[in-house]
Amino acid sequence: MGYGGQDQLGFHLSVLTNMGLLTAVRHTNLLLWLEALKGVVTEKLPTVNVQPEVAEAMLNRFNRALADLEAVIKYLEQ
Image (cartoon, rainbow, N blue to C red; front, side, top):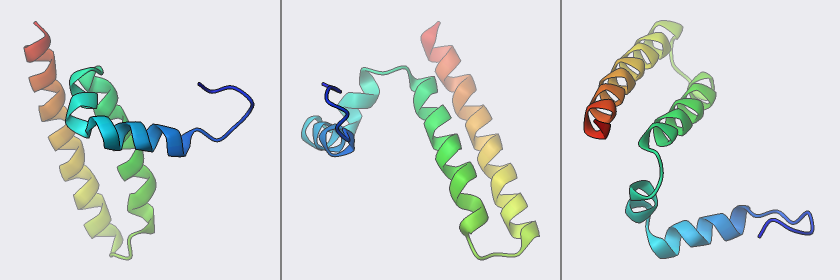
């Protein structure tokens, strides 16, 4: 896997599709999933056509939700 300089996106997406996202989440560090979500939302939010105050409010709400999820994950890891 990952040899020959080929784009592996299709392969990775097919693996996730075949094994299921829930299975993938169960076998990966949950904090990594939160990191990925934060990256995608942070990247996508500026492209949404809303007033700046609305975008900021959505980002604040998202960050609070992430903080809550991080606390739950840390509790479950104990």
